[in-house]
Each structure stands twice: as C-alpha cells, then as structure tokens.
Length: 387
Image (cartoon, rainbow, N blue to C red; front, side, top):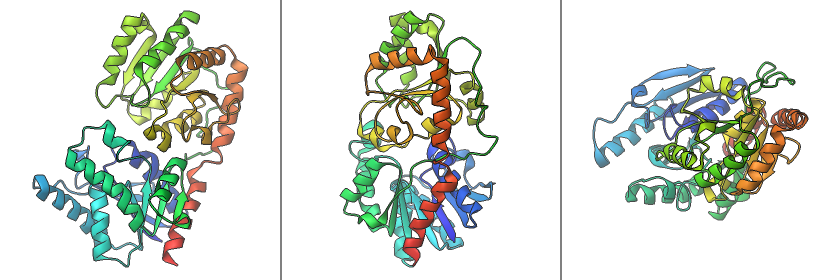
C-alpha cells in the first residue's frame, strides 16, 4: 500500500513526528508498505525544502512560503497539497486534525475524493486543551477547534492515541467502527533494553523528563522537600524546557523552599544524549494534574522511561494506567498529590528489590506495545477504507 502521511510540523523539535508518525511509518515499511511523510517546516525553517530518508521512510519538508499573512497560509497549504499529488498515494493519513496540514487534507479531499483520508488525533487540541494552554491568535484557536471537530467526521477512518480521544471522536458522531485505538508504542530489539540487573551506582537520583505544563510547579517542590529531608543526598535531574519559561519558576520556587541544591536542571537535550542521563537514574517521576490535555495524551516519554529501565512513579491520569499496573510495572499515585508522590518515591528509593521488580514488569509490558504490533492496527484502519 502507498501511504502519504501529512505532518502538522517538521521533524524537529516537536515530538509528534519523531515519537509517533516516524516509528509507525517505519513499522509499516517493514511490513512491505511504501510510506512517505510530508511536513511543513513549522518550528524548523532550516529544514525547508529538505528531503531525507529515515530507515526506509522518505521525509520531505516543503519550502517556506514566500508570502505573508493569509496569502502565506494559502501558499503553505498548496505546497503540501502539491507534494502529495506529485506522487499520488493510495491513501492519506493526516496526523493532528489542525493547522496547515488539516487545511491541506480538506483541499485534497476536494481535488482527489478518490484518495481515502484517515485522520490521526493524539491530543485534545481545541477548547479545554491546547487552545487554552498556548497563546495562539484568536482566529487560529477558532480554526483549530473547528478542524478538530470537522476533520474526523469527514475521514473514512480515525486513529486515536488514547481512550479519552476515542470517546471524544465518538462524541463527534463518528461511527465506532470507523475509530481505531492506536496508542503510542516503542521500537524494541534484543539490544534495545538495558541489562535486567543494571543498577545505577551513583547517589540517589530521580529524573523528571517534562515540558512543565503537565503539573503544578508548587506541587513538584512540595514533593521534593520531604524527599530531601529524608535523603539529603538525593538529586532531581530535570530534562526539558517549558512553553513559557516554567523552568525558571521551578528553580525560583526551589530556592525559596531551600531545595535548589537538589535540582540538576539540564534543559532541552538532544534525543541521542538522553539515554545516558536516564541510565544514571534510580527512579523517574511522572507527575500529572487531572486535566483534559493529560487525560487525552499518550505519553511517549513514559514509554521511553520504562524502556530505559527506570522504575516509574506516575500520577494515575488518563493513559498512564494503560501502561502501568500498580506494583507490577510502576507505582501509581493520585494526581496533584505531593505527599503521595514523595512517599512512593522514598519507598522505591529504599527498596532495590522493588525497583528490579518494577523494571522487569515494565519490560514485560512494553513487549505488548511495540510499533511492530501497533502497525497492524493502522493496517486494519487502512484496509477498512480501501475495500
């Protein structure tokens, strides 16, 4: 099958393409399909006009629009459409029902109604979701909210990354038989998992891999205070950068609470450097507030932590329980509960046998979450629309 995947933005620095589209495309390619990804150079203008191949998958970034404003938007959309129609596929798979690629999908439906459209949704994009979190212009917010509702209804099939999004799409009126549950996965090989008995030898180290909007910063510091009191040598290694400079707020709060010395803030890291940081961690924290965004998302970072062999303490929100069985593949705590987060972390740091049990359980769980297995779900969606 020949599949064109329409991306919402480029391969860097956002995670959707690297964490979801590309590994799924690669798994489909290994199953004999021809898949290419077409992306606007949003967030990565240096890649404009560039074409690369990643493990058998061609990734093409369209050129930067020469025009500004509404005319520039129209040009960006047309560049995507033209790239698709230069080598017409048997099927179009749109990732994220929003933005330039969402508008391109609409135009492609008008120009080539014979090419089936499959829509993928992996976030709550409109009101109550990313529209409320990011400072999009008002016109863009209304467009994204409309696209989120309209495009799944137009699609021949919809793939969803979470149970919450599955319910959302059903609520839009999309028939259940056209909605396919396709959560995030991971690519595992015999060499990709760390040794079963691998144990960090450095001082007690906790890792937080985040973009900061997932939880309350005051709650994080409130959890860190008893951790430092119980174990003065503990270190919290923080990977990531906020949307609005939240990392600076975190550091200021830690300073006021007297625990700034316990934080090792690394900022945004190149993906290739992250495994070495994770390998030195005894425990990973996944704090979450109970919000629509957190319920709807399917965290690739959680899978990355589990695959790195880091025992996880996570808030029980949304998709987390799809991957973590409490006491078997991780520890679960209530959302926005600093005391529970600290207590579970202290317990885990003090119990190497529990760390190993959770590590083993996480590896076992991940074997059911490989992209090789999830690619079959995508195939089912594709087959349903080309019969």
